[in-house]
Image 1 (cartoon, rainbow, N blue to C red):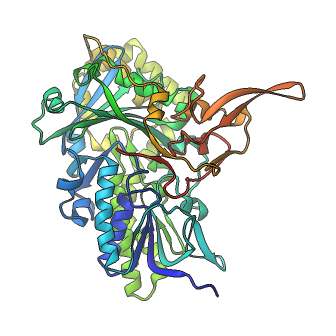
Image 2: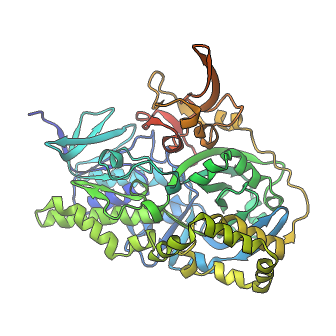
Image 3: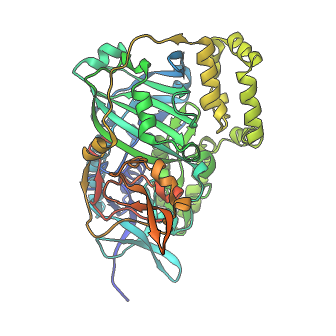
Length: 554
């Protein structure tokens, strides 16, 4: 029998969920090895991003890592605004009450800075157990014996056995797919986020947002500036940069044939943003990722044998109206996974860890947040084309517009209601129609010009850092016909119509005297978001350890 390296626990991925799991395991003297495919923790990670600490959560990041907020985050977010847009008309609501519901604290973060700081602490903790943290290692699948999961396989290392495997390897988890727990089949189950990190002159954030250096703001945007795509925009104040981006339902992005970089530019160049941006606009980084819609895909039983799923790998991303939370749930799930294995091991039954983890997620109320029963009830009624069409028609009618004017400032209370936010259906009505009518009927006209000139797509790609794995493409197109895979040309955040420098291109080829339209692929500019794995017919996997894109901001 082959002798293999063995650890009590292997954690795959050194993001917030993986770090929390590793900390919980190591502090209970579990021999723990953490494997991270990036050159450094955070180099493959992107978020909006706000990290919450919920009052109801059994674990928060600062519970697990002393000094975390002072060393690894940007600004505490104390004010939260929602902007309804229609052309140059804007109606803004203060929804800080919603933001503060069940919130102990909320900080803006950049993933490269945060994750690398966490990784140093994780490495110190796990070394004390006989493990450690290794970077530049891609875990490509599950190791099985007689059909049972007994560890993991890697590109760069020999197979590793483990009594417990934590898949914290993100939304595109190879381990979740290998176990048959998650798939990439339905665009309506996913969001796509695109973000720019914008440099700001010294003191500009405090001056332009009216802050004192000790506080920050979050802004959300919805309405008519996104070509009818369901979703919206965000802006978060970091220490000396801004995170500005958009998040859209992937099926809507595909249906409207909208191009992600253009939707981001629509936000950056809107007159409202002229109060914060100027013609000295400097973009430090352009990035993108898929986001699971937990209401539809958060796995209610995220385990198989010795494997458990944590964070995005298990679909644990909460996006319900103005509520956008993911990293905090990954932290809770990771720590609960570590707690579950520790308890199971103490009972001499380590194989029971998965069932115990599932029970803890349920008993701690995590699953109710991720898959709220109120949403399921509303979805059954509201998420049908005829119903949506009828609601939109009423809202846009004179009667509907009168009702909007009559409600007036009461919309601020409605938008700030945690109860109602858990019921928002995934239709055009709350994302496009209602905010547009609100802005048209209640909003004020924004004067002045926005002088921002965003970089073009070629410059955005050119400014990213890549270590190209020459000769080893990590994506292959299975069916290159435009009818099957053509949606990737517009949905891919580094591709576009009539742009020859991205991943996907539309081409006309002649075969046996007949013309056919196909798509071609160049994986070099890939930002590893996984969009094409859903909207095209591809074989998709992550690049080998340390290869591909390296995010400096995240």
